[in-house]
Image (cartoon, rainbow, N blue to C red; front, side):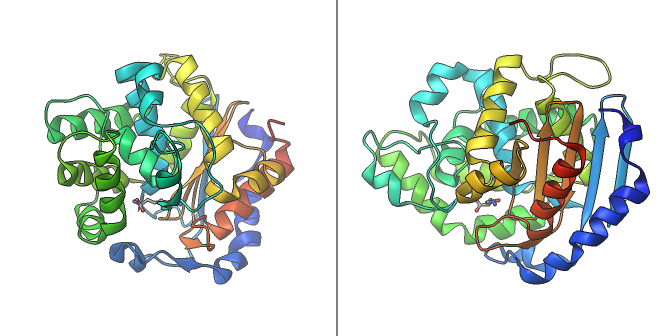
Length: 311
Ligand code: DON
C-alpha cells in the first residue's frame, strides 16, 4: 500500500471521529500504574512499505505493550524452541473466555493453556524463552524488540512493571497451577518478574506500527529486507492474532475489521495488514473485554476505508 492513499488530514479526521467512543470505556486500573493514563487520548501511526510514516492524534503518548507483548514472545519462543516443543506446552484454540480466565485450565486434559494469547498461555510461552538468567532472557527480548522497531532506545517502565508485579496474584495463581501440572518449570516469582517487565515494555505508536508491518509482511525488515522473523513463524503469529488477538471479541472483530490485530490493556492495538502497512494505535479507554474502545473503532474505519480486510 502506498503512502499517497491516506493524508495526514485524513488520519486526523478519522481519529477525531472515533474520539467520542473514549467516553464509553474505562482505563484499566487493576494494574494501578495504568490508571494514570489520560482516558481521552487517541493516537495512530501507519507505517507503509515505502518506509513512509503517517502519525496523528496524541502522538507524543508513550505506553506499555501489555498483551501486545504476547505476540513478540511467541515469535521469539518459536524461534528459540521450535513449534513442536512450544505447542506441547500451549494449545492453538480460541477460548471464548476473558484473557485472565483460569476456568479452562482445570477442565482441559492435558491441563495446558488453550492458546498463547490468554495470560496462562503467555506465561507458559515466556517460561520457554532461552537464556541462563532472567536478565539474559529480558536482554534477548529487548534486543528482538529493537530489531522489530529499529529503535534501540526502547526499554521497560520500571513503575508499571513493579505495579503489576505487586498486584499480579491472579497470574501468580495461574503459574502455580501450571507448575503443578508440569506446564511451567522453575521459579514462579522469577517468571512473574520477567513477564511483568515484558508487559511493561514502553513504546509509541510508530514503534507499534513498525512491529505490525514486520509481522504482516512475512517477517521482513521494511528497510533492509532482512528476515527478522522466519516466514512460517510470522504466519503462526498472524493466525493467532486473527483467532485470539482480541480475546472473546475476536470473532466479531474478524467480521467487522478483518485485520490480524492484538490488543493490550494499556490501550495499545497493533494491526498487521499483509498488504504493506503496519498500524499502531493507542487509546487507553477500554471496553469490558479489555480492548480499546476508540482503537477498535479506528481500526474498523481504516479497514473499511482502504479495503484492508484479509477475508
Ligand atoms: O497479565 C496481564 O493481566 C497484563 N499484563 C496484560 C493483559 C492484557 O493486556 C490483556 N489485554 N487486553
